[in-house]
Length: 135
Image (cartoon, rainbow, N blue to C red; front, side, top):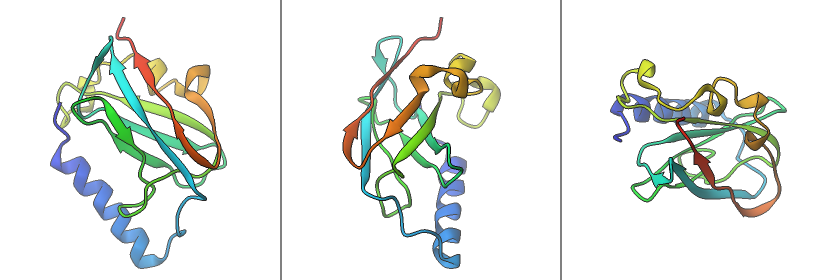
């Protein structure tokens, strides 16, 4: 899968805007990475977001060709705010078309109700792997 230029530009504009207006300096030392597979196979371009239940700014990541991701809090800072998070995972057949989402709602729209996607992020380095299934 290919990450669309539109999505990359939106993220970059958000990060630049936060930098200009003076957002938080970043997460409190929680480094998060892992691997996502879909039906047992790594997929490039899968988007995930770790959203703090506290309402603070989320961290995002995209998978590479090996299904690996590392969360980014800002363009220049890796990581994630420690605390309770809801993880959403999105995979699109066509990155320009949200209707081409092919993961079931339990990974995105209903993620808050999925115990596997409600995580406690702690200070330090940690790995969170996800094996999504389309059936």
